[in-house]
Length: 244
Image 1 (spheres, rainbow, N blue to C red):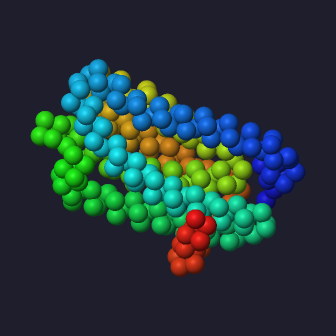
Image 2 (spheres, rainbow, N blue to C red):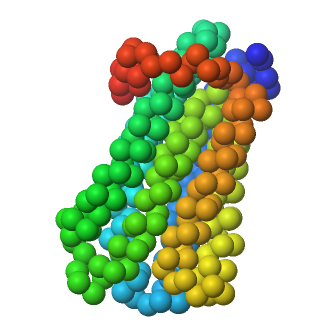
Image 3 (cartoon, rainbow, N blue to C red):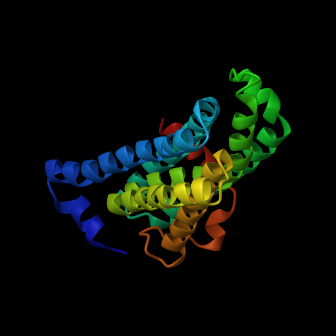
């Protein structure tokens, strides 16, 4: 399959391609930063400083999990880019399939472990007695978003690897926009406080997850992933390690 992104990567100058990929990536990173502070802004107005401190305790946990998901995504994307450059679409699809399996296993393990060790984890990250109830509510609810967000973070890297940086940016914009809309509704109108911010976050992440699934299911992606590409291959799972 050849599309405009493939032709651009093959024929355009490096400087032009750098701008094409850098601008959407920068916009995506800025938008992602906004996503991280939206909850704090609304929670600070609705609940107070202790609730903000509770979110602050949870954020490092989120960032660590996202870093691991992106580690898988970046490594897989590096290999996929080279496979696509060699026109080896089948191997690229196998790498993507194994990457998704690895992320799914990671997500499920994280959710289970956090639910089991929730209180101990919060204490490890320095929560105090007056902050603990807020941090616990926020982490418990947003933990279920870890079933979706690591997949989004990893898949975004794969989408950029096939030359579709704008779609990657649109996914982040979609998630942030939905979170921005739902936050005031759930926090102020439904009076859910910090729980409303957490629900807004996981709803936005779930919709972003559906968007990414649609991207692959409808065949929009340059990588055509079939059922057999999800067969676990040890070398496939390890490909991303070799690219680091």
